[in-house]
Length: 161
Image (cartoon, rainbow, N blue to C red):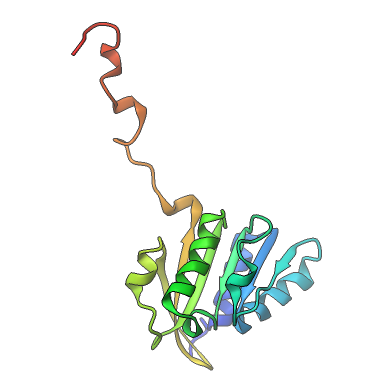
């Protein structure tokens, strides 16, 4: 076992994000969230039921950080994609989802939802893969995808096609 356990990685994600609101679904995530809530009494902790997390979706407020553990491997692909998609589409700033290495969830499932593989981890409960989504870096700016390069603006009013 290394010093980079799943629990420590979740704690680092919380520390680096400095969220005002935190959604934790699953046992490992909930434990990390309770530690955060004890240290940040003015923060808002949301804890949907991991057996049926979509019953609490969409969130009633914008969530800064969502941690999903011990959940996706127990849901169907459709239910899990719905959970992650709703979190993403309703403006969650960052999402970290951890699944066991032997899960039926594959890297391509997460990439299809805009996630990146963040880390391979080993803990007391086994091996895990951490995937992350960050709204601020999800869709990087492209030089060609802006109004400066559309329809020759320097020719407006000078020539007709």
